[in-house]
Image 1 (cartoon, one colour):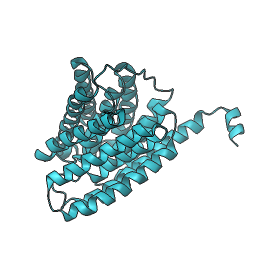
Image 2 (spheres, helix red, strand yellow; image 1 turned 180 degrees about the horizontal axis):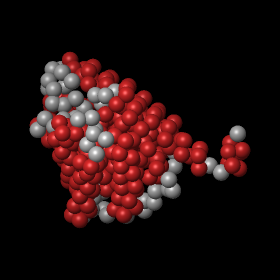
Image 3 (cartoon, helix red, strand yellow; image 1 turned 135 degrees about the vertical axis):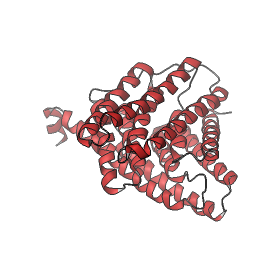
Length: 324
């Protein structure tokens, strides 16, 4: 089996497993589990201690969100700065100390809890803990399936976030939440998660905004093409899971076959995961998918804007003159 086929099979099986579990339990916003599997699938988990660190990072992120909500439940002028600080510096700390998977899990954990409960903390905090179930499900699915496909030990890549990464990540999450409250109040979680993951990816890779937008557009187009026949097939979970996992696997196959364009295909897979996951009733939740496409695109714009503004602000005068 080629490396591309191995990667595609790994992503497809992990997505199917995670989506099946959250679909069976009717977990709210199941896209979160599918998205996280897509993000974690390529990062091998080679020991029980690493798996424990990942689960602990998800718990820590969610508990950090709970702490902010508890300290300032209806005082946004206090809770938003706290959210900005904990998301930015907490995610960067997890990245540096424990690696990329733990950084992703901590960041999405705090966002999933805080954004979900930001408007009505007392009512919606239970949904934040439901998102924690999605995070743990995705972590276990990616790790278990990875055992069968990462046959040889893979050396851990050193992750050193650049200076200012915490500011970009924290600002993207906070600005994404504010924008969602104004423009898409029913998709706070989607917009904020999209803003966070976009800023995180751009800061770690040093750029690639154009590829992000091309990938987002490709993901939306494929999602629309996927949802049209799915809605016509009735509420058939097996057909839906087969199509969902096969297409995310196909994106990973292209990413490994065409490494120069890997960022485009992986961004497309992430957008597709957000837009196309309409469990547990595909025929009834199609309109929600359209809103998530808009929310994902809004988050993509905000995360990219925060990264570009920070890059412009930290550029030396000589570089600015050269650019001009």
